[in-house]
Each structure stands twice: as structure tokens, then as C-alpha cells.
Length: 198
Image 1 (cartoon, rainbow, N blue to C red):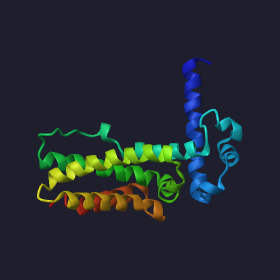
Image 2 (image 1 turned 60 degrees about the vertical axis):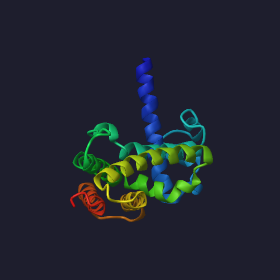
Image 3 (image 1 turned 180 degrees about the vertical axis):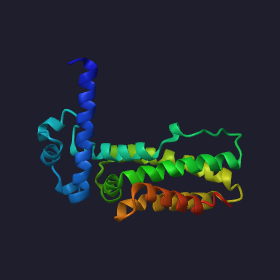
């Protein structure tokens, strides 16, 4: 097996472990799941997981990283610069909203873990997660401020946090809507909440 093939197997095994862990954490809660449980669900021995993760907390952090990676697709959408006006900012914000809505609709089980199990992250992992979240929120606040220059900083902040609450609510209930329907509805609600068509 070549070095590249080994790396692919290692990445694939890591993804299988993260997926299995997310399902178990969503079903039973972080505290009730052991490394042996994760290993059994992923088709590896519990100790084999330690080749990929140094602790159960690191597995949980990887679950959260997957969520942030899925919803923060700024590299795949158009950019605006400091001179861009309200229309360009609104267009970018619509793209980011849809990417976020699509990300959470496609990953409902991961969102359930994110919403209900985040308090289990140890400080060293929580700090990194909070920083990633802050970057995402700052980006959205900047864009909302450009779209609505008449709003105060606190009004912008409140609007953005309310919209994240709306989008993240997917982790708190089971919707019978398809992923496409759910993403579309969430994106529409978020755009309306931010008055992007006003």
C-alpha cells in the first residue's frame, strides 16, 4: 500500500469513527458512550481509536469541527470587499445563509449533538470551538451592518444571534421535512429575519 493510500484509509477510518460517535452521542448522550462503544459502532476496537484520537473529548471536538466546516462555507461563495455596498453584502449573506441552512439540514444528527452535548467539551477544545464560532458570527455581523447601516451595533448583534438560534434549532426537534425542504424553509426564515429583501 502506498503512503497516499494509507493516508486515505486513515482519513476514511477517522470519518467512520466521527460518524459513529455522532450517532451514539445523539442517541445516548456523551457521558453514556465509551470508546469501546464508538469502536464497535465504527467497526474497530476501542483501543484502535487512539491511533486517530487521543481521547473521547477529541472525538467530540471532531464532531463539532465537522459541523462548523459544513456551515461555514465562505470559501465557496462570492466575496465582498470593504468597498462593497449593501446589495453585494446582502447577496453574500443570502449565500452564507443558504450554505448554513443546507449544512444543518443535511446533518441533523450532528446538530443534535452540537446543541445538547457541547457542554461536555473540555476547556482546551471549547476555546478553539468558540473562536471558530466568533469568526463566523463576526463575518455575519459585518455583512448585516452593511445591509442595514441604520441599525446600531447591538441591533445587528441581536439579529445575527437570533438567526443563528433559528438555524441551530434543527438540533432540538425532529422535522418531517426533507433536507431540501428544511434547508429552503430555514434559509427563507433567516433571510426574512434579517430583512434582506426590505
